Image (cartoon, rainbow, N blue to C red; front, top):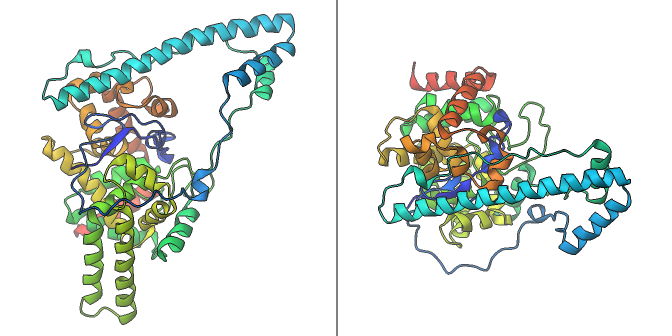
Length: 441
């Protein structure tokens, strides 16, 4: 069964400015054939499951708290404090603003309730084998606030009384490495960017992915400059910035993607490492390294299979110390290219099963971004016409400027246009050249 991601993937793609807000999009809504950050069909049968182990405690870095939610009583108290500090004229402005915002928020919430209801209806129809029609979508974009804005002096006072919640620090590459070492004794084998790209190209061509598909995904996901250890939210050149999601590497896999790929391919990965160790001419030290890595992969596989083979369970597990450690496999010169290439191949295979044999780079990226099922739905003649809000969770839509106020067809065209820009960057040019060298052109 194919793993289906939640509806909106809120990842922040450096190259897109916010395409990534999709993949990290909290609050992904469960969806039908893929919704953005969507997951698609149910997971394929995993190997026999062992009794589920007790849920592991989230890793320290992943569980940092945000500011406590404001209760109704606290909000009322804050409103009173704000009112006490305002002049009569400012109080009138503040009251008018709150009235306008309240009216808009009611309309906005009603809009998203309708989106979620129709998404659920589409899923039910597909399950029952019924045709989906235009009436099963919301034909308009989310309503925008058009009322009065707060003057700077009042806005500053409100912010001092009601400070925004502290943002949670997300795990970094250093965290993935630390958990990998502590939980599994695993230290990824590093390589140069050229060597990593070469391995990636070799694996991609083996499974039928084209240079255009792979390099275009790389260009969009990383801005055409990405390194294999790049995490979403950071600049691959300056190394500045903070993680805004767990999206990692050339294909920007989320930590839950890594868990899913190990569940599906972990046994094959381990066997391949053992075969490499046994190949004639392999130095003894290298053979020992490969065998040890195969043993570590088996441990990771057992850990990943201790939870149900479904997206939500993988999302929860991925935030634990073991899940974060498994994500470090993307940085390994032996396993990283295999894992990311097979993820892209699964998108291509999913499309082929639905009659789309030749995906463009933008189409495969749409599936990578939104999840296979949702990406495919967005590419149907009917889906293309619909506002992108139909395919995203409210949170994912709000965090992702690139998807807002566009139809699915317009989003696809935007992805294509941004790819064209980032294909001219040095990382993309180098990747394309290496593909040609590997293909013998």
